[in-house]
Length: 125
Picture 1 (tube, rainbow, N blue to C red):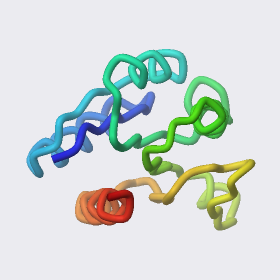
Picture 2: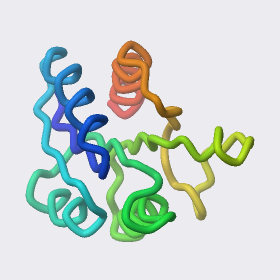
Picture 3: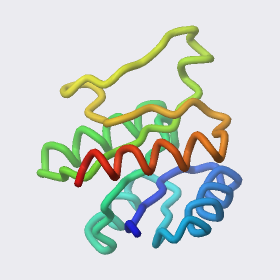
């Protein structure tokens, strides 16, 4: 299965996602901030990144995704966010502003998470 890094400042989201994805056989690493997440990307070498949109700063996830893409990180990125519900808008992939492969609305349904992870991993192979 895949090496997946989860970067989210909500420990409940991290614990739940980690539990469900480990049950599917994935190797999971976690980080709770953008800076720790950037370090873990280098150390762990994830094949998939699950990234919260808003952490310490409102745009931490978006900034991290842009930084990684500019550094050549090509693995899929799933963005977790409740920003669409808060703002009443739908967000979509944008190679410059939001260079991610897929969005998952919070609160995260475990089945949706597992299905999206499988889909982006299959698409990247």
